[in-house]
Image: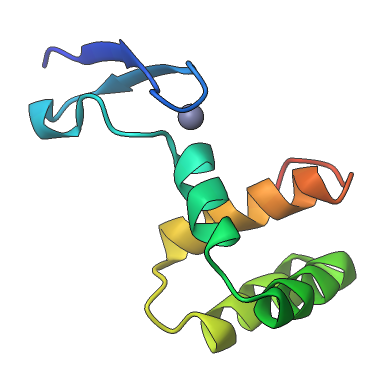
Length: 91
Ligand SMILES: [Zn+2]
C-alpha cells in the first residue's frame, strides 16, 4: 500500500495518509485547535476544568458538551488541551 506524504497546511507537520482524498487536510491537532476556538467560552471552561481532573472526566465532559464528537476527535482534543494546560501531552 502506498502512502501519500504532505505537510499539514496549518502547522507544517509531516503527514502520511493512505487515502488520496485526505491529502492536504489539516492534522488532528490543527483540527482540534480550530474546533476549540469555535466553542463558546463557557464550554471551553467546563472542558478544561474536567481535563485538569483527569482524562476520563475530560472525555466525559466533551461527550456531554459535544454530543456529535467521535472518540478519535475527543482524543485529539484531549491531547491538545492537556498540552495547552501544561500537562503531560500523552494520554
Ligand atoms: Zn497541523
